[in-house]
Amino acid sequence: MTTHTPASVRVRAPGKINVFLEVGDVQDDGYHELATAFQAVSLYEEMTATPADDISLEVSSRGPVDIDGVPTDDRNLAIRAARLLAQTAGVDRGAHLLIRKAVPVAGGMGGGSADAAAALVACDALWGLGMPMSELSRMAARLGADVPFALMGGTAVGTGRGDELSPALARGRFDWVLVPNDVGMSTPVVYGELDAHRERHAVDIGPAPRVPAVDPDVLHALRQGDAKMLAATLRNDLQAAALHLRPDLARVLERGESSGALAGLVSGSGPTLAFLATDEASAIDLQVTLSAAGLVALHVHGPVPGARVV
Ligand code: C5P
Image (cartoon, rainbow, N blue to C red; front, side):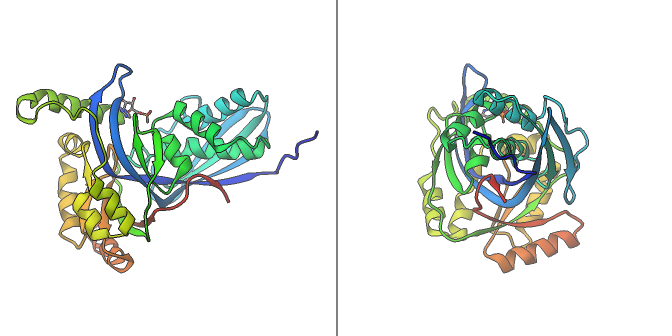
């Protein structure tokens, strides 16, 4: 059988916001047990895959994303994803991957994870593999805790490391304004700061929750498509750690909240801040106000689908 090789494959993969993130104890493997509610938002990584002898990567930027320091070798999750797929499928195929990044680098929005999910979907199509989603999802989990969600998209609850997913019902759309930051943050460092904080305050705050769980009010708000209700239940356990490391973010958080946002929170491990707006019109107003104050502000909405061929 001859397999048809397309001249190129284009894939889009979304960034994410954790609208709820409860962090439990650190496990033996160094990962924390957590419970999170993810929402994929309309800020996309774009990838074009073309046939090549080897697996290679080129990274460019869309918009204000600073791509300095993004590796294009085996340290890059997209390269690792393509290699893992080739190995799992038992094919000796190559691909040149061109990523156009719009999701902030080291921004707490899962940009690297979106690139890995995009690489799985793009190479699967380029190589004509037709891998089932369940298989791609298993590979995604081996690459990183947030990669399965970048593949799935929409709105989902994640447990375990954040990679055990179940879809969550969400009605309508939620409008967000994102404020990225020039200086990225390292996810392990932020988790480490949370551990140190819990250690320092062990007497006052007691032990970390034994089994983290998503607040049912968050799921209710998502089901109702009710932004006001969701705003009241937004929570991120990494936020205090991120703000401790980067006190400058607190001022921006206040700025957004006093400029018409329903609520704001640190996205994932930061430093991107996500502000929830009542509706599209108020998100546009908020974006204009924050831009006028000299901040980079991006209006996005969620939920949107996961990594897809376009
Ligand atoms: O899986 P990923 O490479 O995205 O995780 C980056 C780092 O974030 C991990 O090495 C770990 O330090 C931290 N992490 C964690 N618990 C999780 C997810 C990530 O401690 N559930």
